[in-house]
Image (cartoon, rainbow, N blue to C red; front, side, top):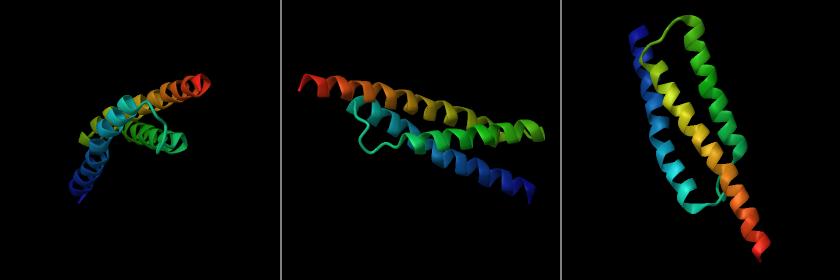
Amino acid sequence: MELLAEILETMMIIGFGVSWPLSIYKSYTSKSTKGKSILFLFCIAIGYICGIFSKLISHNLNLAFWFYIPNVLMVSTDIVLYFRNKKWEAKESEKK
C-alpha cells in the first residue's frame, strides 16, 4: 500500500509539473500578467516547499521528492516572470 501511495503522489506531482513549462512560455512570450494570480503562484510554491521539507523531515527521499524540486523551480521562474511582466506593463502604460 505504501508503494502505491508513493506512486500516486509522484504521478500527481508530474501531472502538475507538466503544466508549468506551458505557463512559463506564455508568461515569457506574452509579457503580460493578465490571467495570472501572484497569490496563486506563491501558494503553489509554498505547497511544493512544504512537500520538500516533509520528505526531508521524514527521511523519505522517494521518487516524488525529486519531482518537487523542478516544480518549485518552475513556479519560481513563473513568479519572476510575473514581476518582469508587471514592470513591462507599467512602462507600456507610461508611454500612453
